[in-house]
Image (cartoon, rainbow over all chains, first blue to last red; front, side):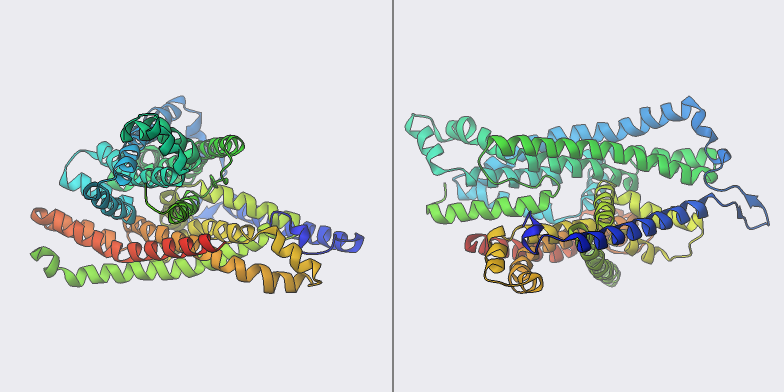
Length: 308
Length: 215
């Protein structure tokens, strides 16, 4: 349904004029609401003691940002704290996902079934609860609690994605590997796995966007990252009158990081889509893409008879 | 184990709050998401642009930041919302683009040939959409929507970090109070989350599998 024009006749001059008029009206309304919000924020307001406070765009609420030390602190402690946790967790999650996918698609039921249960358990739990669990039970310190919880959760998801990728491969791939005299593990690692990984790369990168966003949960378990720095430490040092300004800065920094990674995910998805013949997996929607991948893998297996 | 049984009423209190967050923000996210999805496919360019920008921005903002805004920055700007309501608003806003995407991908999943066939036998716009496209799109949106609600269930735990006494907050409080039974207490909390998420996940997988084969 990518072409909505199928649904109705090509609009004539009257319909086009109508839709243009409506478009302008709606656009004006949206702009008016935005302007009203900005205007309200810019108004000076009265504090409890009859004191007049300046509006939120007044220079006195933003003057600390001329101090390079503030920026240095935000970037060195905040952004780096977030990126450090996200990078460590990404690398570990991909490694764990590979291990999970191999265990999950093992030929031995004693390995496969417990892994499936563990994966289901990990996927059904809130990451935040895992962080708290690791923090309190293993007392690892906040950094490793955040990294370990993100690794386990995203590792389970990546593992499931790779498993679906392995299962969706044509059976001939494995048979060809085996008939060349490879051992089952060799065929899996050298023939099947690289293809599955490539097929699932968009899902994996999209999952990494989720991981990056989820590092902000570290705020709740006391890990010092971008949110803790900009919304807790700095406002309590400079005073709460800067809270709104800090919030805007934090929002912009998060959006910059996440949008960059999202665009990268889309780029990866476009590249893999043009190279491989398989259906395109939506890079914006890892959960959805995963459901599709799992279902088509199950469908392939049902058609092909015996499980690999 | 004793600590869990002793505190069962507290657990249930937290669980009730989690369910309440889930239901209220689930329904409002559904409404908001449908609106956004309708804007995204509407012929009015400015609404389409607005919905696209909204989806892109909200989806790339961490949930923690959205809840922080509703629970801490908004009162500072002059709102008087209780924390529960603030959390519900934040969760609905955060979830709405995901709902919109699930709906949109369901509609996009209906093969173009279906609409073409309907048009070529002479059905009008309303008939094509109402009789041919939507009935098929509906069942394709169910599994992704369930997925969105599973994510929402897990996301309600973030509200526990912002003064809402739900399951996660209860678990944290009990774990601090009973230092000797932390594992049992947190596993109890995990069980209550899994009671919601695992059955939903199984249903979603089952439905998707059934319908993918049919397609």
